[in-house]
Length: 82
Image (cartoon, rainbow, N blue to C red; front, side, top):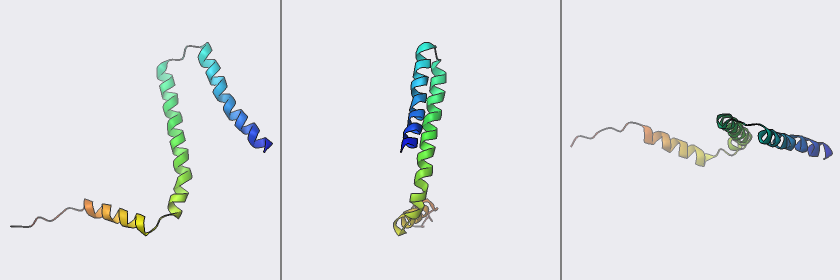
């Protein structure tokens, strides 16, 4: 438990350190936007990788029927004369 606390403290300290640097130096807004976008993308990717295993385990007939219905809706329809 102490190891988890130490790793959490280390991870949180980077936020404090970055905040102090931003107060002392003038950081361009473009750089802030790039770093925020990278962080958001990394967070979404981490969540997706975490959830993909659960989604594969929970795949059932309901999901298969939904995918099949979606595929059928995309098929070209035949025109009827008349």
